[in-house]
Length: 282
Ligand SMILES: [Zn+2]
Image (cartoon, rainbow, N blue to C red; front, side, top):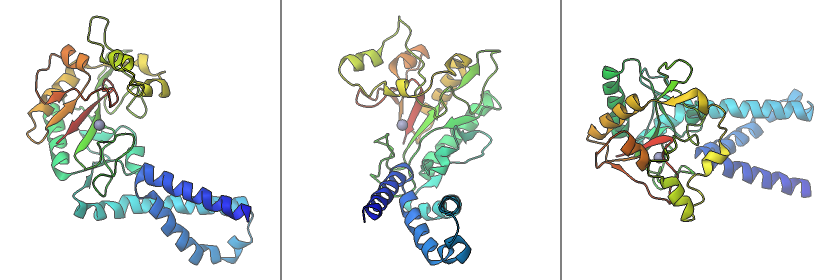
């Protein structure tokens, strides 16, 4: 009895976790368990196999089932909801971390996809061979279903992009690369002479503002140099995209890059700091 209860609580927790992380993972798991019960679980050899072996087969089968649905079915179903996946292997635009796509966190409206691709193309006319790395976008379905921890990424109209970097070792321009493996949490800190918004927010009691810096490993930081030239060019191009309405970066970087567009705004202390990535929205 207690064993069964623990199993049910574990299953509910797993479904919730998959829903928060991937939006559709919980539903896919339920569907898989139904199919499992009606088909594979009836195979005699599997029924009598050792528990660990059975668990391995079950987990492996679920992962394959999940991947097939996310790669081939979800993009088709997302279209009527006005969302399309960002490209996984485009010449100018790629995910920094493939997990962004495997967790369905790379959906945007067609308008935002077109504007982003147009900006990366324009950047390539100035800096050929540049590949922009994208971070979290939105889930495939339903408005007002936030992609945690980004509360505003809930309508297909928001997208985060990584900064551009050069290698500290030889100054070589890096592409689809960032010091943080998730793209967040390794900051391009304000110089002592610059406006220090992160300190200001921290002193006002906004503990979450810089929290990622203490959660994300910093060991790659010294290998990467902020590529001010290419990042500035990217931001200038983004501000000229008619569909893009707002861009968030930290105020000290806006000043450092000598950018003046009204589209580049400050996001407020209630968000998290933006000196590790660029946020764009329609
Ligand atoms: Zn964002």
